[in-house]
Structure formats: C-alpha cells, structure tokens
Image 1 (cartoon, helix red, strand yellow):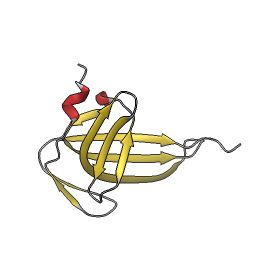
Image 2: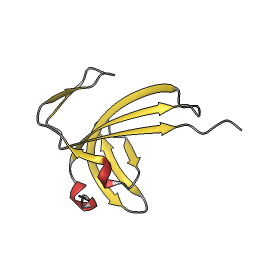
Image 3: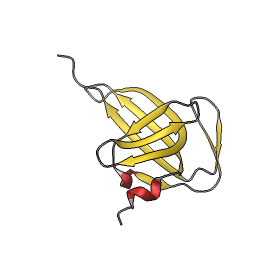
Amino acid sequence: MERDPYSLLGKYVLIGITREDADGSFLEMTECHGRIALVDPDQGIRVVLSDGEVLTLPPDPDSFRDARPGVYRLRSTGEEVVDPDLTTVWTIQEPAAE
C-alpha cells in the first residue's frame, strides 16, 4: 500500500544512514532524528534534525515505516529517542573517483 506523502508532515522520524564507497564497501553508519517539515515531490522530504540542521531525503514516502512504541538508543551517540512516529533507513553509495 502506498503511503500518502503528505501524511508524513509533522511526524517525528528516526533515520539511519549507511555510507558505502563506490565498490560497496562500508564507510560509516550514522543515526539522527527530527521532525518532517516539508514533503515535496521535486525538493524531497526535509527533516529538521534535533540539532537544528536540515536533512533532505529523497521524495520516497514508501521508505518510511511506522515505528514501534518504545525507547530507541542511537548506537553512535547513546542518545535515546522515545516513541518516534516513523523510522527510515537509507544507503548512500559514493560515486567512483574519476
């Protein structure tokens, strides 16, 4: 079932991002969280993170999952996020060096 993209607006999301090099080898994993402030099919999904930074994700609402209630501890920082609305996980592959 497709998710209505605009249903994401105002939701609190926990985000996991894995970066890989051009060969697919692991570089790093980061976790962050924040509130979805903009959903636009051209500009993407903008999240205002807990530290005030803005992260723009691809405009793919089906990549967001309803989060189970509970406490989520970020592996990278030990920070706890309580009862986020959504979770999403992304893998970014770096382009090959030219």
